[in-house]
Image (cartoon, rainbow, N blue to C red; front, top):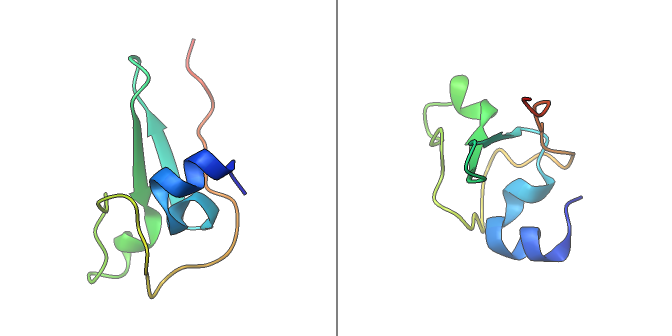
Length: 68
């Protein structure tokens, strides 16, 4: 799971297997819900912090490889 500061800022997504983190060149993070691809009730980029989610699945978010 992510560190406590990230968990407080992001909520459930910080420990969800369906989360994918996109990082911009300027350092911004965008937390995307991959489960939203098959569940129309979920937002692709939910407002953070997420405190409740019916699709939450404990696991590690996907962090794409850093770009050079």
